Image 1 (cartoon, rainbow, N blue to C red):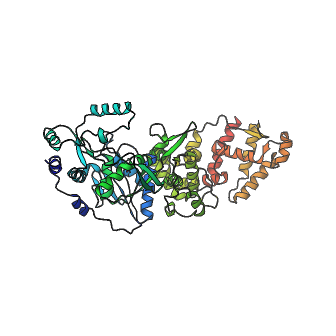
Image 2 (cartoon, helix red, strand yellow):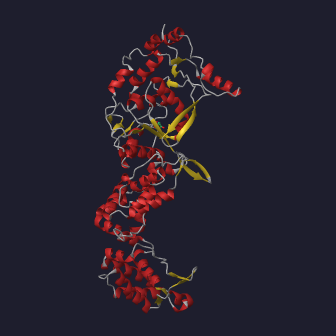
Amino acid sequence: MTNKDLADLIFPNIKSTIKDLEERYPERNLNPNAMVTRFAPSPTGFLHTGSLFTSLVSYRFAKQSGGVFYIRLEDTDTKREIEGSGAELVKQLKVFGVIPDEGYISDTEEKGSYGPYKQSNRSEIYNTVIKYLIEIGRAYPCFATSEELAKLREEQTARKEIPGYYGKYAIYRDYPIDEAYNRIKNGDPYIIRFKSMGNHNNKIAFHDEIRGDLELTENDQDIVILKGDGLPTYHFAHLCDDHFMHTTVVTRGEEWLPSLPIHLELFDTLGFKRPRYAHFPVIMKVDNGVRRKLSKRKDNEAAVEFFLKSGYPKYGFIEYLLTIANSNYEEWRDQNKDKSYNDFMLSFEKMSLDGALFDLEKVESISKERMAYRKASVLADEVLDWASIYEPEFANRISRNKEFFTSILNIEREKENPRKDYAKYSDIYPIISFMYSDVYDSIDKSSLDLTVKVGKKDTKEVSKAVVVEFLKKYMENYNLDVTEEEWFENMKQIAESMKFTSDRKAYKENPDEYYGQVGDAAGFIRLAIAGRKSTPNIYYVQKILGYDEVLRRVNVTIDILSK
Ligand code: GLU
C-alpha cells in the first residue's frame, strides 16, 4: 500500500494534475509592474467599513499599475454564510466605484478566465492539489475526534506547552497507510491535514510590502487543509486560488499576519512562487479613551450601509478612506484641488502600521468640503438618487420641481468660496424645507423669537409692534432687482431709520437707545420668511421665492404678530 493508493481512494474522480491546472490558468500577459490584486470576502453579512477600505485600496493599486483587480467569494465556511450577501457585497462595492475586472458577480454570474471565482465551485482544483500532497507524503488523513483534540489541548496547557496539532502530538501523521486506507474504506470520518516540516524554534525572514522586513516563527502545525464537509480551509484555499489566479500582491487585513508562516510553508512545499503580501492596518476607534477594533456589533460606522443611509456622498467617504490609507493624501489633495481622487498614486510605504483610527468628524469635514464644490445640478441628481432610496417623500418633492430644488442648492455655490453647509444629503432638507410653501405654512409660528442680543450673553425682546412696523416698511420698499450689496444697503437704511443701528460700539455703550442692530432687523426678515432666524443667504432665498410668495409670508407673519 502506498501514498498513491491512499490518494486514489480518497479522490477517485480526480484525474487532473497540477500541471493540467498550470496549463488551464497560464501566466497573465501583463507588464512586469502591473499588480494583480483581489478582494476575497466571505459572504457573512453586510459590507464592513474595513472591507470597503481593503477592497478600495486593493482596487486602486491594480488600476494605477495597469493590472487586474478581481473578486473571489470565499464561501467555504458554510455555517457562517448568510444567503445572498455575496452578491450584495459586490453591489455595494460598485456604488463606490470598486468594479472588478473579473471575478464573482453573483451566485449565478461571473466573468474572467481564471474562475470559478467562488470557492465552493473550485473543489476539483483543491482536490487535485491535495491529492498530490498526499501522494508525496505531505498531507494525510486524520481521524482524531473533537474529544481527542480537546483532551490533547488540555494536556498541552497543563504542561505549559504550545497548543495544537504538531510534532509528537500529531498522532495521525505517521499512521500506517494500510490502517488509514481500511478506516476510510470502512467509512470512518476524517479530515486532511498538511504535514509540516517546520520547527517553531526556527525563524524565517519575510518582507511585507507595508511592514517591511519581518522575522517570523516557522510553522510546525499540521493544519487542516480539507474539512469533514469536503471543503478546504482558508489557509489552503487561498494558496491554490492566489497561485492559479496569479495574484501578485495579496492585500488583506493584518489579522492574517500570524498565520503567514503557514502560508509560506504551503507555497514553498508546492514549489509555487510566493506572492507578495501587504497586510493592511485594521480600522480602530477610540472608545472611552481606549483604542479598539471597529466592531460590527457596537459601532454604526462599522457598516458601510450606515454612511449610505445617512447620505454621506460616496466621494467624500472614499476620500476619507484614502486619507487613512496614505498619510500624504491630504497634502496631495490640497495641491491638486481640481483632480479626481483617482489620480492620486497610492503607495505601500505611506501606509500606517499601527491601526488606522476612524474619525467620523473627519468624514463629515471632508464630505462638507467636497460637496461644496459640486455643481448644483450634479448635486441635485445625487440627492435625488439618495432620497429615492432613503427618503421617498423628499424625492417626490424634488422630482415635482427639480429646477426649484436645484436653484435652492445653488445658493452661494459655484463660486470661489462656496458655502459649506451640508456634510451629507440628509442635512439638506431640514435646512431648506421652509422654502416649500406647504412646509412654511405648517410651521408653528405661535411663539416667534423676537429676542435680540445685548452684549455677549444678555438678550432683550423687541416689541411685536416694532417688528411689524419694520416688516411693513421693508415690504413697501421691496426691491430685489439689485445686487446683494444694494439690497442690503436699502434694508439697512430702513432699519436705521427705525433705531436699528449699524454702529456696534454705540450699541454696546447705549443698548437702550436702540431696538437692536441692523443684523437683528435682517433676522426678522428671515423669521418672517422662514419661520426661523437662520437660513441660507436670505437675498437669494427671496429671489427664488419671488415677490408674491415673500409678500404672502411677510403678511402671514404680520397677521400673527398683530393679534
Ligand atoms: N476571506 C478572508 C476574509 O474575509 C479573506 C482574506 C484574504 O483577503 O486573503 O478575511
